Image 1 (cartoon, rainbow, N blue to C red):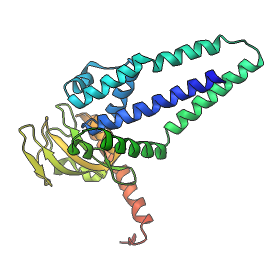
Image 2: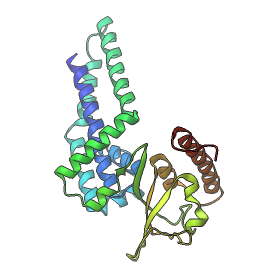
Image 3: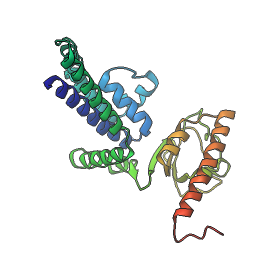
Image 4: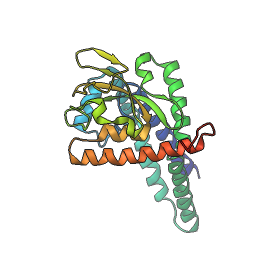
Length: 259
């Protein structure tokens, strides 16, 4: 039972550490998807891709976060799990061994299910934000990028690259509002910041967009590339956005759905 408890505790600690680290990386301006991937990669030592690693090593805050995760991984989180599992599998067989194995699988499954819960995700994010605000010196501007409003809506920054679907378009042409996305500001590579940009504002590679919308929609936009596939993805997102807005209007007792 001690081996099982140790494995579950290590798994839970790994989950908490990577979640806090991913929030810290998001606070530095990375997208949530990339931040979580990089946090898990740094802790386990696998999957740390060259392209995204450049975004980390060239940023002082991200570099400190990743170095801490690497240190924790080397100290023994992954090694302890492997050692305990070897000890557990090497224990005496028979009925009790099967029961312990089933208990271990059940415990790990429960941790996985909890980690996939949106309620757990929001609670962990809030706790991580408080810890970062209290115990670190992250700039206020960085922390603002992880602002979560309500109903899965967030304010965050999106970096525009050459191959991105939105690069080279004007905001009116992109019709992001159809997807439920509002562009609050545009930071040019030159250092110029455009607050409350209008529909004629062009989006260029190297820009940093301050956007508001549902977290999953913003993540999809961040990964959308130029071309026919990107246009199709925009059309699907716009259709889904209209369904969501219609559902919100129906749920609002103050709204007149007949208009």
